[in-house]
Length: 158
Length: 113
Image (cartoon, rainbow over the protein chains, first blue to last red):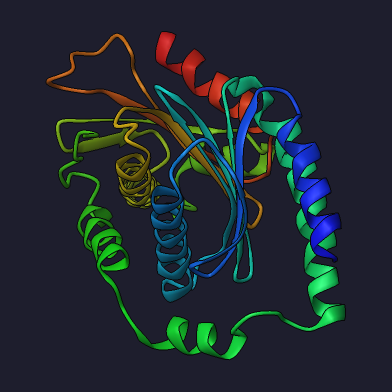
């Protein structure tokens, strides 16, 4: 998928419904971003999503679509291999429509990556995913280890 | 897994949501201890993911979260009417992918029952 096609497709998604931001990443590396947050914050969020995806891989689990409703907006996350697509939007009722669009994009994108070969540090990313634990994955793991017993403490959301 | 639990078996057969409540360190459900433990584990993971993401976005209060994994849909909602010092959570697991909006609505309906 050419950079122009990638950009125009994601620009189209960004004008759908109440979407106010998008980014696409491979591992920790941003491929595309158009969101009303600083570059630093988006970069940190991409790293966090990568940590979350890595945690699930380590646990041999495979969620592929997550949605979070925050006070200030909603976040839809699609995970496809090493790629993550994050969509910020205002109206929670749009989640399924946006997910449908986003999933269609991710399928096309994944196909194009297979055809064109993986751009940008595939070997390095694979090495990182197999080896290095990090703070966030450890933090999620620590949370998950506790509550196997249903009587374990449930932490209030901060 | 909890195959001896009638409510669990029926929910799986009919593709119905299994609902749970959680507060003050305990989770409760009607589909057996293993299923409730699974809910509690997923709740803690998803809550921690929400906290990590919320920290980066400076959006600290999460109202709901949902994910698809395989054929399962999992999610939770905070009970907006509960005491902030003792937040109540309701959530569900269903063994099929249902629209996330419909799923969250069903949890909110459960909260309001």
